[in-house]
Amino acid sequence: MQRTAVIAVVLIFTAGLCLAQPFTIEDFDSPEAFAEGGRARAAAGAAYEVVDDGQGGSAIAATFPGGGMVTISLEGEVDREEWDGCNGVAFRFRGDGSELWACIGLQGEGSNRQFSYSLYVPLADTEWHEVRAHFSEFSATDTPVYGLGEPGMLPISGIGAIVLGDRWSIHWNNASIPPHEFAIDDFRLISDAPEPSPTPPARPLDDVLRLMRDEQPVTIQCMGDSITAGTGLPDRDSQRYAVLLQQKLRERLGYDEIVCYSRAVGGSKTNHGRAWIGRDFDDVKPDLVTIAYGYNDKSGTYPADYYRFSMADYIDRIARVTAGQAAICPITTLPGDGPRFVMLDDYAQQVRDLCAEREDVQCIDLHTQIKAMGAAAWGAMLRDMAHPNVDGHEWLAEAIADWLVERVEALE
Image 1 (cartoon, rainbow, N blue to C red):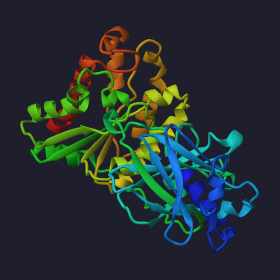
Image 2 (image 1 turned 135 degrees about the vertical axis):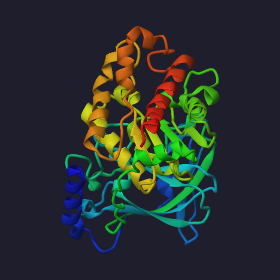
Image 3 (image 1 turned 90 degrees about the vertical axis):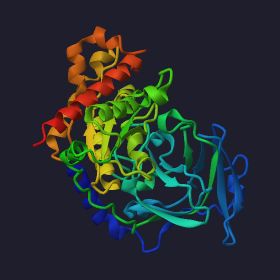
Image 4 (image 1 turned 180 degrees about the vertical axis):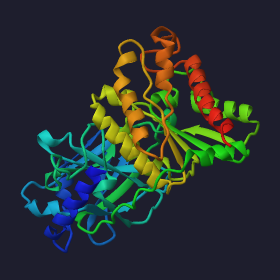
């Protein structure tokens, strides 16, 4: 909350520095800049071409085989000081009509390249339209950095490149992302980007428990990384814990209108969950969301306090995108095998502390149960240092079902 307040004060103070007119940082009207050896470069199978923008100028159309990136370096000889008064971006955009979402990134240059931020935009609209986004809608990608323009982070004037696309070739439950394309034009920095809506409290869990008690329809969305996605299972679409949780809850509560599903992505961190918030909740209205991230954050050497920040921001984004209509239950980061049996203890405690601090979320503490089980017993339910095997997913589903059913039965 203090970080949000600081950002607000900085933006209010600097708003007057930004001119009334937006700063066009790339209009794509210089085709020679995008010829071979120019300011654009494509990687990982991505490609681009200069196309007519429908307004007498040109735009960039990028195509992707699944993942891939096109990086467009901004012109260097530009006075950027006044950029720091802006609060967001606007650009013209044209999708390919698919259900996919595209990544639009902003990145520092040189030694600041790791300060990289992503915004995901739906591809459904095939007509040129304007996208306007506040900088707070962007999320850091792979590195543990705070928001664009925050004190100590990359200032707006430090933006050195626009990045189209990302490194991801998989999405929900590790399914391959199909080929897709989009076009972009007239990229501007603006000072009147709409402020994000206030964060509502998450839905009280008791509301969802009462629906279960009264045998009403309930939908549970399980978010997380490869552990939740079921990486390494012989048949992950039938054996991951989200599927088993649905079966167990239906059996134990005696009705079939409980739906549990996963939208997890192998290799993802809390940062990615934050960035994908629009995509992951665009077409669904879950009653309950479980969150199980942390293993990859640790692999990325995220400090524990950054992990907590990122988890808290992710919870806030879920609450906003669901308009407070979903209960949210973070799961304590699960131990791994070998050294990872102890290395994730600090993350698990951060989840406990965060949930204890907030009044609107409840922690599903599986970490404590696994620790009581012991390293050898838990290791027998893992197929490697990270991923549960069939028995491990069975245990996770049973443990989450126990947690929920106990609370349903305890209702007055």
